[in-house]
Amino acid sequence: MFAYKLDDDIELKPLSMEHTGALYSLTDKSRERLREWLPWVDNVTEETHTVQFIKNAIRQAADNGGFTAGIWVKGELAGVIGFHEIDWHNRTVGIGYWLGKVHEGQGIMSSACRALVDYALIDLDLNRVEIRCATSNHRSRGVPERLGFVLEGIIRQAEKLPLGYVNHAVYGMLQSEWKLLR
Image 1 (cartoon, rainbow, N blue to C red):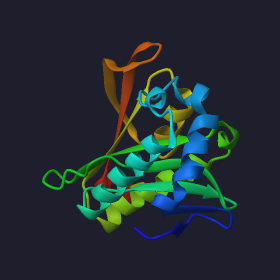
Image 2: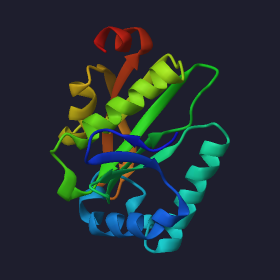
Image 3: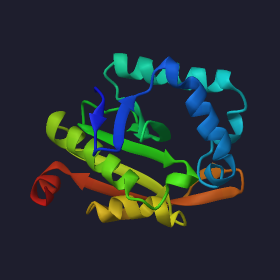
Image 4: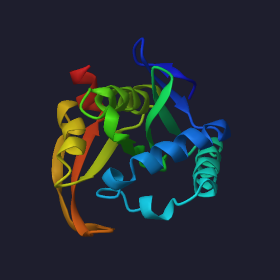
C-alpha cells in the first residue's frame, strides 16, 4: 500500500523506521487512554519496543500478510490502523486501529477504516472484514456501526486488559454487502 490521501488534511502511510520517534511519543502521550482498551500498551516502555513493532509490520507487509499504516493529520501522526494477518485461503481479514486522544471524535477513524474496508473488499477481493471491540468501548464500536457493519455477536471475556477481562463485540462486513453500500 502506498500513501493514500483521505482528504486535504488526512493521509495514511505505511509505517517505516523513520516513524519510530513519532509513534513512540504518540503512544506515550496516549498511554492512559489506550491502556483501557489495548493489552500491549503497558509493554511499550521504550522506543526499542516501537522499533520492534514497526519491524514486524514491515515484515508482515513483505510477506503479503497485511500492513500497518500511520494516520497523519496535517503532517502529524494521529494514530494507527492496519490489517491483522490476512487469511488468504478464507479471504478474510480483521482491522485494528487506535487514535491519540486529541484526535478522537472528528470522524478520522471512520474515514480511515472506510478506506481500508474498500481496499480489502474491492482491491484485494477479500470476502469478509471483521472488527472486534470491547463492548464498553463505545467510540471504537461506533466506527463499524457508522460504516454499516453487522454486529454478529459478543465473545465473553475475550481479552485480558490491565483492568481485567473485557467482552468483545464482533462486527462483520461481507464483500456483497459492501458493494451495495458503496
